[in-house]
Amino acid sequence: MRRPFAAPYFEQVSDPAQADVIIFIEDDDGYIRQSPFYAQYPTKCLVISGTDLPTFYLPAIYASNYRHLFSAHRTETYCYFSDERNPFIAQRKNAPVRKEVLLSFVGGATSWTRKVLFRFSDQLAAPDVVIRPSDDYQHWTNEDSYLPTKRERQKEYAELMGKSSFILCPRGAGHSSMRLFEAMEMGICPIILADGWIPPEGPDWKSCALFLPESQVKESVALARKFAASAETMGRQAREEYERFFSDESHSQRLHHLILKVTASRQPAREKVIHLVYPVYRGLKQIRAQLHGRFRRIVLWIFKTFGWTFPYRLNRPT
Image (cartoon, rainbow, N blue to C red):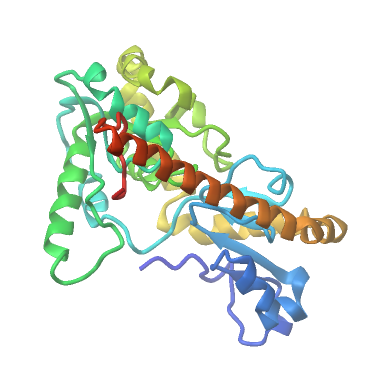
């Protein structure tokens, strides 16, 4: 189990008055506003979360941090440190494996970029390219009846990653994805498609990762072939950067550093303005989500009514 807040960088106290910072791992502005800790010590509070959809209500450290009106000078980016990890990644990261696959991606159609990728996967098909949907995989399900299937799927996923020279990392429901850091841990160069995502500070990203605009997802195989000769070097560098900045042993030091940065940049006047306009922002977000849902249902209803096949893969039932 990971211990991201360990000594000597952190000491947990029971009295919030003695705390230097109060950390919320639940990035829910309603929950935060109702918290007695926030009510009494608002300037001590910040969020550390791997949520796909940051709220930006408080200064925060996010895995899926992205360029936003409320993120500038208030947020930092870090990796995920959930205990719900694929156990086979760590088991296989040191195993010598022959690279039989140039580029692979196995994941759900949880973003438009991924839907486009699956839509044109036939055009990208090649003997050394694997692009496969896994929308039926239930990562957060731990029921006894599903666990054997889950472990088998995780093992297959890790084995495929180990055989790959590049791992395609298109954004999912959030701007980041766990596979990006899994690829680095296994010593594989990630190809990142996540417009707006703010990479964590520290790693020399140019030496260990490739970036491609989401609109150019169909060029991902061509990009991998262009850099095929550098795959081993970039993968080795990715592993070094992971061990230095994202490994279990580095969490406490890195989080301590990022927390100090976030707290040092905090401006009470700016926080007051953001919280003043936040109800309007939240309301507009809800309206947008409702309109998006209605539009989706209407489009799918039209296709179903006329007996047409919807050309893009859906990650959830219609």
